[in-house]
Image 1: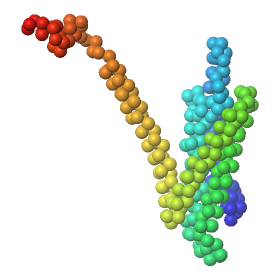
Image 2: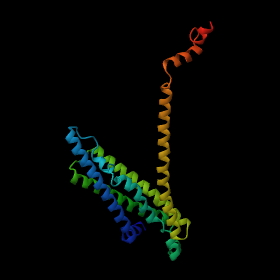
Image 3: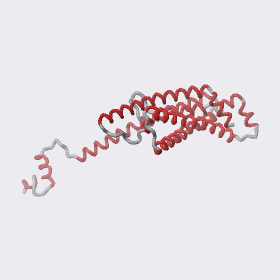
Length: 252
């Protein structure tokens, strides 16, 4: 069942179109990061400074401002693949009448759902690792800077975490496919969550930054005395509380 589902996903036009969109977006982000790295290298060479550490990893994060980085594109578009692979996995079988035929065989429901999930997760792993190694190869070809073993293993761990992240979206889309009878309903629920969570995280990050800036300004305000008081006014205020000076001395 896993082999059959894997082949059906690869031969579907939906997966081909989504893969083309993700590849084009990642290629654009790679071009932006390579341009930013070349500009940074030329600027450091002109100023006489050496190259910074983990230069190879900057291909996945750096950008020249025209497009987001590779990791930003991958974290935003890769969940679409998980949603597209799972939103109609079960309800389409139910609507076509093939689900009852499958379950009439000596086959457990858990095996049926696990086969759907494992085949989608294998395809996601193939796509993510192919994109990651493609970026590494293009980086070797363009900037001519080979990765260190630490950088290579960091990239591998990052790709594994990305596969797990997209697998969560695949599992969520399978849940919607089991829960709802219509494929359009499950697809809309998955896309709504895909749009909602990045917007929520983006809007939550800005108020936290503003609170941090306000706290820093508050600490600075309490650290320094008000600058509007001159020396005579400060002496008069101190005389109210220090015996033998100011008003206390005049009263004596």
